[in-house]
Each structure stands twice: as structure tokens, then as C-alpha cells.
Image (cartoon, rainbow, N blue to C red; front, side, top):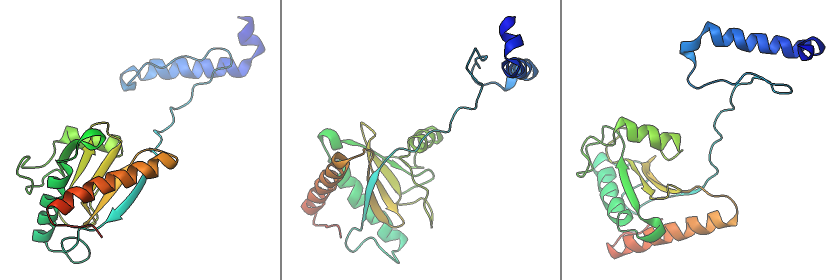
Length: 189
């Protein structure tokens, strides 16, 4: 009781927190802690965006400005064939955008739950133009590398790391994809 008398601002904060807890118990999504001495109730900070390095490239002849929907679908086919051949740290899965009908293994594209998870991990893009057909994201198993297929009718290689190691991993990822593409007669520019 003496603490409350000596620190009236603490007492007010405690009363406000208790009133809020009683007034709207159904609105709380997780338990709130009441303040103790030298602790204040504050909103949880927003999630910090992940640090990333990326590079944008075009598949020669199939990506760039003014591509047709058929070219976009062919670019998706060629890139996903190369990406799905990746092994080791680059191995992963391809997720066509929701409502996309261009990837035969997943007609209709990714589910709403997959979309939510990928977006929460900063692995998903929103197309600037056009429909979802021919667009998607390849994500490695560790979910720290991605290739955004036909994001703005180009491919964006993304690595979620910081420091000089990030650029090295990005370069290695890009080179592995280029090697797989060369086997099929395609190149990135």
C-alpha cells in the first residue's frame, strides 16, 4: 500500500490496466500482464521487416517489357523446371499465386493459408499488373531464399541475410539457377 501512495503515476497506470482488462475481456487475444514497479503497459511493437538483398533479372526472350500472357506462362514453366532441380541449401518448393491456373501441379494456385504464411515471412510479392497466371514464388526449405517468378514480368532472387555473406549466398543462388537454365538452353540477362 505504501508503494501506491509514494508513486501516484504507478497507481494510475495500474488502475487503467485493470479497468481495460475488466472492460473488454473478449477483445484480448493474449494475456496482458499488469504492471509491476518500474514496468509500464505498452503496445507490442510491430514486427520488424526481415533484412534482405535481392537482384532482378530477365529470362532472355521471355521476360521484360511488353510480354504476352503466353510468354509469361512459358517463363514460369522454364524457371520452375530449373528451380525445382535445385539441391542442397537451394532445394525448395514452388507456390503459384492464388487463383493461378498456369502451374499444372497446383491448379488454382496456393491456398489462403499458404499465402498468409508466406506473406507473414516476407516471402510473397503482390503483382503490380495483370493476373496471377504465370506468377509465383519459389522458396527454399530453410525459407531464407526465394525467387519471385514474373514479379513485374521478371524474376527477383531474394536472400534474407545481412552482411557480406548475404551477397555471396545471393550470387551462389543465382549462379545455380543460371546453370540449370543453361542446360535447357536459356539464359538470364
